[in-house]
Length: 372
Image (cartoon, rainbow, N blue to C red; front, side, top):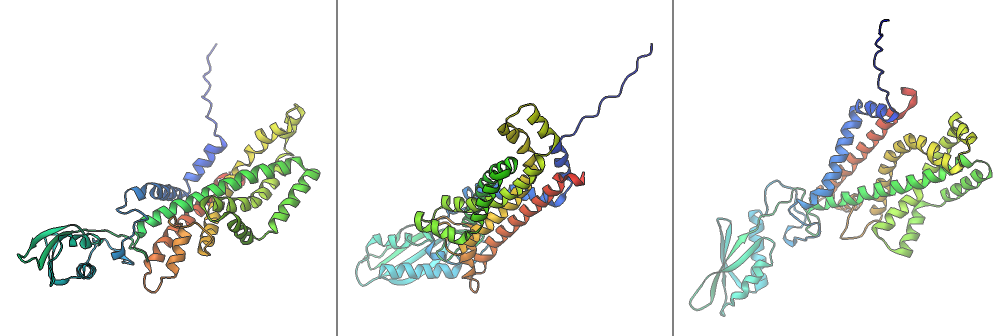
């Protein structure tokens, strides 16, 4: 009897593996995914490596333009020397820069107190001021100080804060609000919509009428009421946005649940005596994950835009925290003299929104059963 060797069975492909392979074939979606991961990591880790804290104010560097070279400029050194002399109420005999240091000579009709170095150290341009020499009669004093080099790659704002650090910290807030509010909207919308669609009948009618009533409430009025009663804070913004945007998700999930509950495997589970809650959690909700994931990627940009809009109106996060919407609002007021205050936050916001939308389009194509 001849042995017959059967060919090895081909490995099966799961729905998610097949969707991942289709997503990898979409260049725009994959580039957007890598960019979004990079942007998230940059906003989380970047502020730890920037040369300035996001709350540090440099009074001598207000609204300086972005530059790859170090500040101060020669004219800024001259201005800082004159300001220090003016604060000390002495006369300036002259100053010179030599080897990263500045030598300032003071004169006065009365003997000069050596503690005048304090006025030099108060400047953001100089540090480590100390007496380099004094005349025998004490009427002339020379002070030596190091010139402190500062880098402002994105420039500074109206109060002298580093825009690069503030843009990255603002990205943390905008992305956190987008992801958290989107997550809340998805969780509430999926549970509410799946329950409504699977239950059907009068329960479905009542639950959907509640959604219609909530739809009639103006979103801005709802947020203003929350601000009046609870004040402005990060958690409020997250709750206000997430508590409104779940309505669309509930409608989408309800429609999918109405279709799924008519499938044969759901009827078979009912015939086997599986409880309605078990069917809902084991069969209905898992089969909704495709549309939910797609809508989640489209919901996050919507949340970020809403947060930016509210921040533009002054209803967003409070100082010293910031968001991309707050920075754009501030930059819009300074377009004539400081365009960089608007350009850099706008670039970060728009590129992130584009990336999220491309990812959503890629997931839609990858999870669409009609394209398989």
